[in-house]
Amino acid sequence: MIISRFFYRKSSRQVAKDRLKILLISDRANCSPEMMEMIKTDIAKVISKYMKIDTQSMEIQITKTGSKGRNMKNPALYANIPILDIKQ
Amino acid sequence: MSEVIVVTSGKGGVGKTTTSANVGTGLAAMGKKVVLIDTDIGLRNLDVVMGLENRIVYNLVDVVDGNCRVKQALIKDKRHPSLYLLPSAQTKDKTAVHEEQMIKIIEYLKQSFDYIILDCPAGIEQGFKNAIAGADRALVVTTPEVSAIRDADRIIGLLEANEFSKIDLIINRLRVDMVRRGDMMSSADVIDILSIPLIGIVPDDENVVIATNQGEPLVGNNTLAGKAYQNICCRVLGEEVPFMEFEKGISFWTRVTGIFHKN
Image: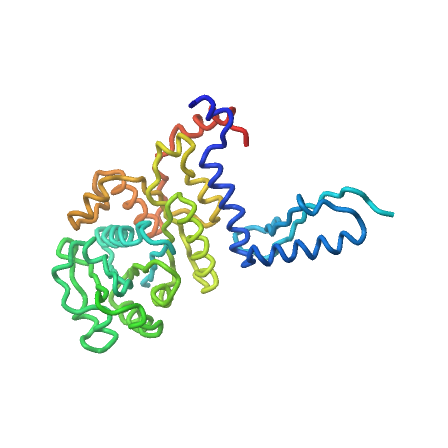
């Protein structure tokens, strides 16, 4: 069991760290999950005009860009939108 | 020049009061004139942790209401000639005091003390606002858990918004065995997430419970936590003290197990 834990499971330390990193990004940006969802649907709507995208697996996230320190001076909105087909 | 330090955390139960008691006692033992102020109105605890609960006559709210002078409410700690406690009220609530009143008391105490240490209540409401109002430096206490770190991050944001000149981090209750197993975030992980300077790591030590039972701060004695608090006091004074090596061997261990982890 211990061996399988080493091989297949992320350590709970790493899980905690990863969860916190994502959690704090939205905490710091003061952006609710509902609002993020609204932004996501709106982006999907606009992009869909030009190409066929996979709305199910698209992801958006607010991250801090290269700025130093913990002050969110210039946060950035990252969107990962898989394109299924580029229309003409 | 006197320094006003608030000990805060956001989340409750992470060790604000224990930290306040030990840092205050430690600084007094090093010859500084120190006053500890318990700002947790309604849930006062600093007096019991300090072992001074039987000597309270007046409290913070009495001072604010004008029932007594500040000097009358101060309790002198007999173990250290330069250590005083201004206890909180147990019967009132946080709204009994306002920011301006706290600032006034602190300004008065600045005349006769080198360090004014404020034990902040949990939460971000009026009690927190009172505690940070007159302070210019903060010690943020957290434990290596997601809930405590999340709250600490929120608190740091609020302190930055209030233009604190110095915000330092204390990581409390670190369990070296769990970090070694990969089941607790290391101090490096916590610093990486919170991005503020570290001023101390206090290991999870059962002596803290024993010391609290006895009402006797353990700073400076021959326990792991006692040494850790002593080091924090030195760093508060600006001395450079190397961090104790609780986490020795971890880098090697994580290197070995890291091969198997799929991250």
